[in-house]
Length: 231
Ligand SMILES: *Cc1c(COP(=O)(O)O)cnc(C)c1O
Image 1 (spheres, rainbow, N blue to C red):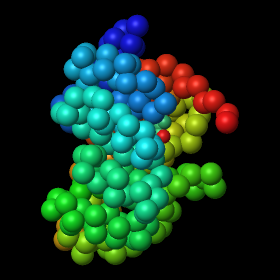
Image 2: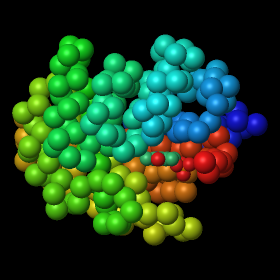
Image 3: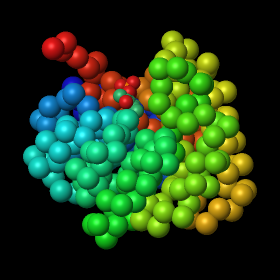
């Protein structure tokens, strides 16, 4: 069943690439596996997926040891500074940098491990109270501030668009974040790249690809609805 879901997602991605005149190779599908058991991740791994997204440090650590070593783990959730040390040597990218202090801690931990961590700046693209991320107005400033941290590398921007029934409603936000990336790129800041746009989730990834997404983060569309148990 999961393989069928994955096939459908892949077809949607390819159709969106054609519609948006994008190359399929320029779009990475990250399978968002939060709350799902390792057996389900293994099934999707066996179908060829290598990029998985998680939003909790503890969950990454638990799954990391039980699954193949060539998985590329993406940290996509809000990250507390005191937990950076647990995932610094496990993830291939941190999508959720939204403050200088967090960037500074990532830099310290990355340096300890003699690595350079690829990161994205998270933008609160629709100024929603409930969402993390810096405002559009502050994104350039954050880029300028973190530029001197030499054990992390800013690759681009990430956003979680509003939850909408009609994905067309998010098109304007995807355009805005792409434009923001263009504007920042024009500043030619050392150590700041803007080639990655991590936008688009189950409800709107086709529109996101048409508007320039290079990473889409799809959970429900692959693994089905998530169940959250209240403790
Ligand atoms: C859960 C989550 C996703 C995936 O959401 P779906 O709607 O299930 O595809 C993508 N990005 C982030 C940051 C998430 O937390």
